[in-house]
Length: 174
Image 1 (tube, rainbow, N blue to C red):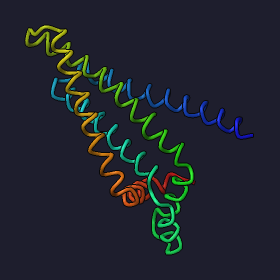
Image 2 (image 1 turned 120 degrees about the horizontal axis):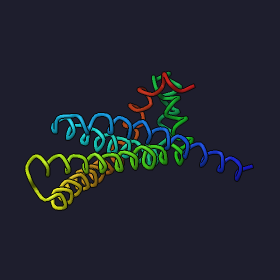
Image 3 (image 1 turned 180 degrees about the vertical axis):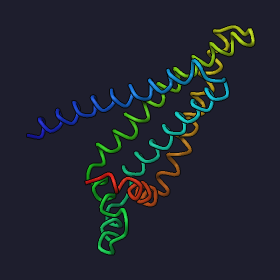
């Protein structure tokens, strides 16, 4: 029974990852090639930011203290019941936030970076290889640095982060 549940979860998360990746890729492919370079760069930073935010949420859910949410739920605090549901499924929620959203944002920001490198090298006449290396390195640095900073925040303020996230998604959770 457990193995069947795990298999269903893996299949579900794989399909969800495909759909989300498809949507994010579609957005980037529709916007980046035809957009002004500033809009393209903004889109890359949005994907980086989304990856960092969801990494923070995943880490916070992993380390949060469920007892405080039970206490909030008895006082009917908005989002507390959702926080309990999230923490009851820590592994799945963290996997979705960190692996699905975080990894997809990393891949998409990298592919957007390649498009930006191609544009910049053609506009400014720079070497494509050097431009691509610099841009992908900048994207990696911002992503890794942001996630490192975010993890510290997530661990330090896990309950608050989970509660705030829970308030936002409560209307969408059964």
